Length: 139
Image (tube, rainbow, N blue to C red; front, side, top):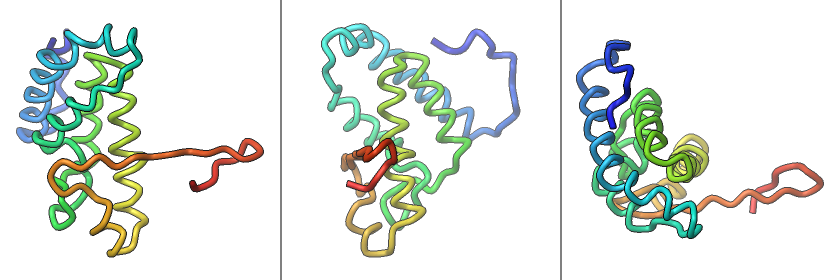
């Protein structure tokens, strides 16, 4: 399932290339075969989140001291790209989890909140967006 544009190389480094290859293989083997069923049955694939946690994909932009892998946004985007290549809906869910939720706690939470909510091993953090008069509010 590697991109058809493999020769289109931005020279992002060995770490990014390794992450791309590992996540691509995971997406090819674990996500792509189930993508149609996930969409059709509207079932959230909880087991994939545990596997992604085992791979260190949850909380990529979170420092190691709070249970993340301490990587950056380039690595996160590459993971999003490879997961989305297999399933747009799983990719969207991963993005909501890793960026809208976990990353925002990392960026804006106090130390107590970070220790409580950021991933330690495999931990699913949920994100809820509530609109009031068409404006987002915390819920």
